[in-house]
Picture 1: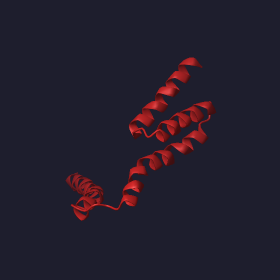
Picture 2: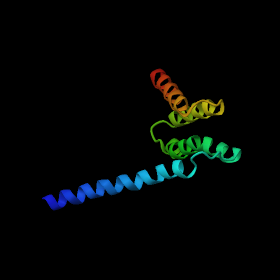
Picture 3: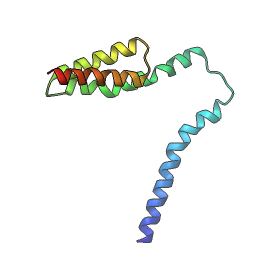
Picture 4: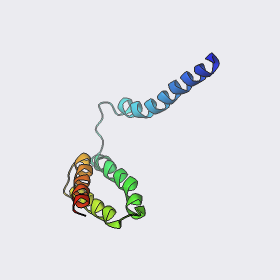
Length: 104
């Protein structure tokens, strides 16, 4: 039993290192350096692009009522277009869908 727990502990440590190293490297490499404005603009839009890539298939594949997907996406697109934070985009679309589900 101890051989198995040693393997599990080593796997957990290995997985921790594999996820920690890519997160730590940019801080070490770019410490004290300013990124070009174009790169900064691209990186600022990564959360919105990721959110869209994760949510868009769900909009098209929702099977009960397509309007949930359409209204949630419209609310998210509008709040994102207005420049809201990602959290506000998500909470805004949740609020719109909560109101829609309480009406219908």
